[in-house]
Image 1 (spheres, rainbow, N blue to C red):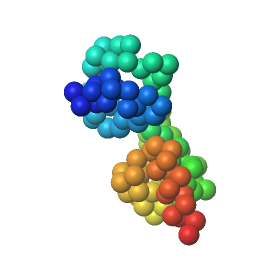
Image 2: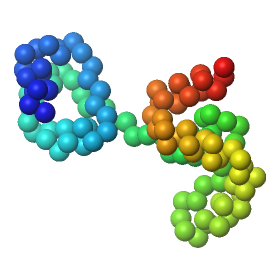
Image 3: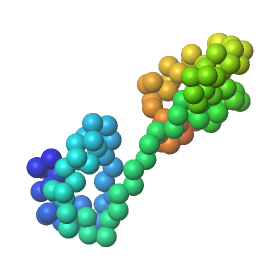
Length: 113
């Protein structure tokens, strides 16, 4: 993180947008106080990945059953049995690319080709 602080302090990132992903973002959030008064007029935008069911809905015509609590897990499994071939393929792609908007857009473009 020391190198990142130097970049900020030097003004090299003055007009830039910095995107931090993965474990680095967790560390950066934990050390947020180190960057006080260094963000100028910037703001933090925390973007969580889309859930797998949202990912499926975006990339296919499938509308999977969701289980928001343990009581309905069996019903969701039964409801999703019709998609036994589609869901594992999409899940493999989801695991590789994640559920962030850019990766979803890229996956959708690849699928359309």
